[in-house]
Image (cartoon, rainbow, N blue to C red; front, side, top):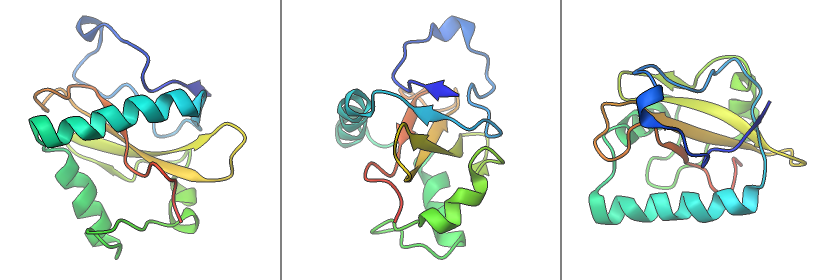
Length: 132
């Protein structure tokens, strides 16, 4: 299923549940455009502070033996989650695996819940260069 993470959604029509379904095989379209917006979101972490949901990603990295200071999840590891199940799912975020159209690399996307002030329902690519 093609997806555009930066697509505007009216926040009044989104429930407290997550919009993305980890059981779907999402393919990012127009990746170059996505990268620009995703870079801006990551830069906002420096200005506004990172959402509490980022701790969920760090906990997942630690639990699975990856480096928190220099995240290094591998395609071999995350590929089994693609279109199958979330990497993690908490009250603050869920992590899912997506691919880019025409690319064999996997990317980790964190979807923030409504509990993240300033980042409600934001979808963030955490591995901008893909997985290793």
